[in-house]
Image 1 (tube, rainbow, N blue to C red):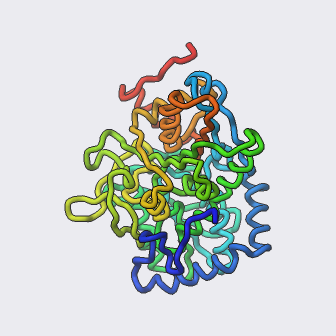
Image 2: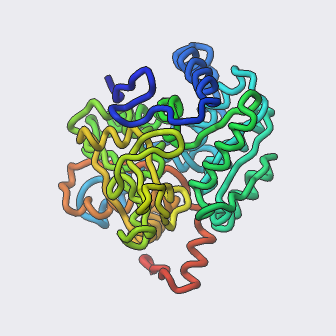
Image 3: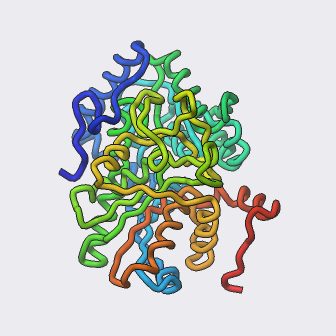
Length: 406
């Protein structure tokens, strides 16, 4: 099997499950039953493939960064160009799949959470496409950091609600989205954006994002005649990473590497490295590695990247960590910003700050590897959404704009 085993009640090993109010159990069962009914249904898959190709523009290319590879003098670095999807990220793969399920369930309203805004934008777009009402919850801090994406959502008819509780980032956006769903589960469909949450969300999101890994496998075999040596992806909740990893799990020769944000440092509250520095715990309806405070509650987290500052992670990643099939490392704000500028100035490709964490690790290890080594980095999103924030930080003197080609 290419994927990790999942029990009937939604556990990957000890991780996952459904730790939710009793009211939600029948709603989740209906969703799980609907997913199982349609996941291999020819008509559903035909619709899904149609929108992936005709609406989003798949297949996305596997691109060799020849300039960056030459500059580093080691392994070949390929990018899986999810930034070239419609709307600029991998998120639309999942929103298309879930909204097609929502239509088949007869739901009228879509509820979603978003961090960096890419999932919110993809949800707003697919809700508009399907003629459905859409409300997106977003932390108030992220609303300020990602104003462009907020306006994009509003342009497509979505209502954006700023979460004002706690740290006012992604965790709080999920809290408020879940509360809104609990208030009206009969009419609403919660379109969750990452491979987290109660069963069946982690497996649904993995399945809809697995197109990334399938394409990358085919493209690497076609281009290089063999599988890659490394597959590297950033990890917040972990949907882009599990999408890439999914088709390589069975191939022990391929090293799977997830890169978390170490932010400003490894002190509590300065990072969001749940797998590297956390411990198992229950949050948002599932058991997984998470960062805890002294009371055992979700700890404050931070990342320069709005899409990575989440105190837990998808349960399948926790399972892959514990069985030793995938390894998880971290990259700092500084390393991510350096990678952001490096790719921009060597290849003319501006990466999302989320993806820049994965790229930073590839840049770190490539010079130490042979020139025959193949690295695939999942470029999960484009950096247009981050340009204003990077400009602000440069003007504030926190980072310098390098002149590599000057």
